[in-house]
Image (cartoon, helix red, strand yellow):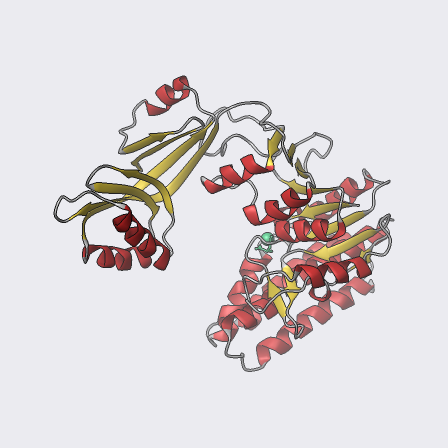
Length: 419
Ligand code: ASP
Ligand code: MG
């Protein structure tokens, strides 16, 4: 079986849903599990409903009406018959949402969040599944809340792999058939809906593939695949035909929005290839991420990370910075959840490039001041080039005033002021 994932952008309008059907028709000989996100910006809109309901502020009813109108307008382009069963299914879902919003919210915000936000995917999959059936793509609609079992860490739920595998294997009886299932959502032991973290549908695709030993996962996107840099930031970017899982994890670590490491890990573990392909041009090969594939083409990969800050920490008495100091400093980074992106030491000082965080950084600085002298400067950007050459660095440094640079055999990093 293959696992396909379609994100919010691919189902943001009726054309998108029709396009999914066209893509699936290209794979007529494959058993497929089709993982679908909420349509367009529905998750953001439902987040607003949650806030309004929970804090009893604003008009959740009006927001819900807007979300309903958006879906009904897509449906009117897909289903001409006003008595089509899908209208009943979707209306029933909005009825359930209204019931939830009419009752007094439970104390736990995150639980309420998951209960409401999870409906975005329920609605989108109802529509996609019904449309596929209408155009002759037979399929079974599955409820991920009965299959993806998690703990109660609402909004960031962790998967119970064993239980999930058993349930998925029971549900997917026929590996030659087509199944439509929601991304992003699951449920805890009490069957309360849970979510896996924003943008979690890719992760669902990986979970399903892992549990069912799928042949591959394909993420269908509005870009041709994974590029060697963000085209909005860098010129002359090229498509990467192949990358290894390890390379993809490294790129994500330095800040590339390739694929989330959480999605990669289960696939890497089982050696299931991950394809990133264009839903606009489904015949073109896109990018393949798999075990052991050397980067192809072997080009430098560029990453720009904004909202960075430089922190310089010195001993107060000009003593050497030793392991004891460093472990004390890193313990504070850990305590305040500060991510270090680059570190350099001299005899009496350490310099770090960190993510600036307006809430936690002041707390960190207060703690550090008790034992060290410090300087702090925000408003920086960190560039990373993997697989650089000397000439890349020269071109890159033109008109830039480096505050901190570091090179390893594969990675060059440069922190500059964000202008
Ligand atoms: N709909 C969810 C979100 O927007 C999950 C996803 O799109 O992957 O975060
Ligand atoms: Mg989404």
